[in-house]
Image (cartoon, rainbow, N blue to C red; front, top):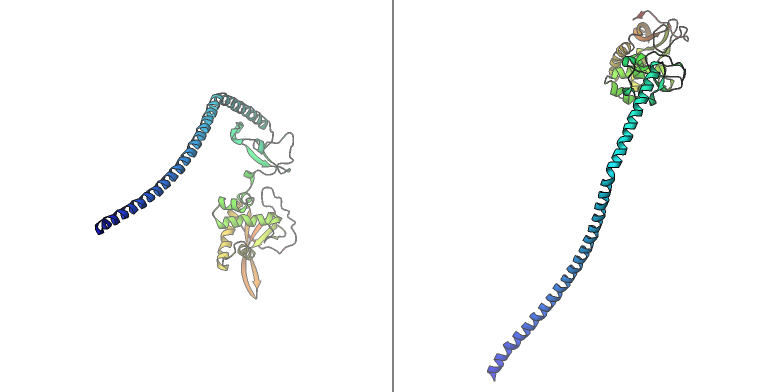
Length: 298
C-alpha cells in the first residue's frame, strides 16, 4: 500500500503542473490572437488609406495630364501678349522721345529713362511748381507750360545743396565724412524752417547771413550728443572746410575781434555774401540789422 501511494503522489503533481502550463498556454494564445486581430484591423485601415491615396494620385495625374495638354496654347497666348506689350512699349518710347525732342516735359513716373533714345543721349530730371518731377532734354522749355515754372534740376545745385536735400539715412549712405554731413545739415538748417535748430544770423550791408564758430560748436554738440567740447572745436574747423568745399567757395570766412570778460579774442565767421552766386537763391543785400562785419578773408 505504501508503494502505490508513493507512485501516485508524483503523478498527481505532474498532472497539476501540466494543467497549469496548459492554462498559461491558453492565456498566451488568447493574447496572441487578440494582438493578431488588432494588427489585422490596422492592416485593413492602412489598406483602405492606401486605396484612397492611390485614387487621389490617379486624379492628380489625370489633372496634370490635362494641364500639360492645355499648357502649349496658354504659353502661346502669353508669348503673344508679351510681344504685344513690348511692341506697345517701343511705340510709347518712340513717341516720348519725339515729344521730348520737341521740348515737352514728361512726368517722371510715366517715363522709363533707360529705354528712351533721345538726341544727345541725356535726359534731365527737374522739379516744378506743382511739386511734380519731370523729364526733359537739358534746358528745354515746355511749350505747353504744364506744372508751372521749372525748379532747379538736381545737377544744377551745388554739392552742399544736393546733400542738404537728403534725409539722414541717404546722407550717411552718400558720405562717410562726419564734417560733410554736418555741413549739409547746417546748410539745411539755414534754408529749411522746419529744421528748427538754426544757428545762422542775419547779416548787414553786403553780408546776407553768417554763423559764428562758437555758435557752430554749440550747434554741433546738440547735433552729435556725447561728444566733448574739445572734439566739437575740431569738428568746427573741419565742418568749415567742408562748407567751403561743398559750396564751391560760395561762402567766405571772416575773422573778427571779440571781447568777453575783459579778454579780447579772434573769432571766425562763415559768411554768405549778398551777391553770392547760389543756385535758386537771390539773397537781398538789405538784410535785417545785424552786427557789423570786419574784413572778409575769402
